[in-house]
Image (cartoon, rainbow, N blue to C red; front, top):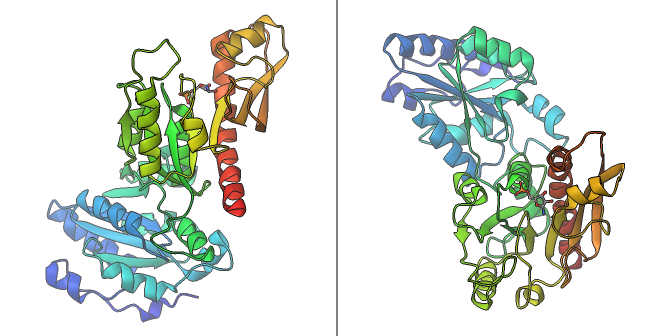
Length: 381
Ligand code: GRF
């Protein structure tokens, strides 16, 4: 159990006190510090987490959090609650060492340790001016108790974007597989799309929240102002427009195909993911990534390949439709099927309402199938 008695009282807030503060402060003294800062018109920022194996993603996140105010307090879970939350193998380091490491960062002004599973009690005692969480959270994923508390105390909640592909679980898995900074995790993905990129978003979200172990290294679009590109940039993923040339609609020029292959190879991509990419994938791209290009299609293939799959399902009077993830081959929506999800076709459905229902299923199915495919590629070497 975390021993509150080992906490040494810290002095007032200034640079010298920051240096003199112990590795671990108590929540109560940080609450006092908050009042003092408030009286001076300054802001205390609070964030919380496990922080048991720091990586560049943490450091960037903490820097951003610190920049929101004048003093950053990091609340870390006590060892017992980490074990409950993350399993018997965690935390990698005990709370005292995690606090020591965090306090060595310039961005971190105080560290407190809390024994409860949730941060509510800590928020209540500290009453930060700003409470911040990583980008895998949304205001909706905060539990009701936390939301009400934050509202009641008038705390400003900020969600900061996480660095894609950087997570403690990914680092631990990388080490288990033998590690090696040069080799990378072997789970480098690129996403190609032409439109709004909701599947790309679902995949990046799954990575940020550690449901999918993958490193997104590149997003490519044939449309210069496609949302998928701005979405990628906003999340710190390289985004590239490739001019498709003046081929017939749905085709890519030889130069465009070559540029895509060159860029994917330069980025050492392991798996190429098509997410609403409205061009046919031809040679030399097919051979360069043979068996390593996935597509998602809004029907239960082999039914309704090609465009307008939702309209075709309704016109055919199908009572059920869905989506399919398959490996891309030289045909249109013909490659080996990896997985499918089913959704009902409801009376009165239009292509748009059916498409929306299928989209929701796609956002579950695609990240999961991508993870399974990466596992398989890794196993097969
Ligand atoms: C999805 O419905 C997918 O099945 C199809 O194109 C659509 C892409 O949507 N291949 P988004 O760009 O991912 O939102």
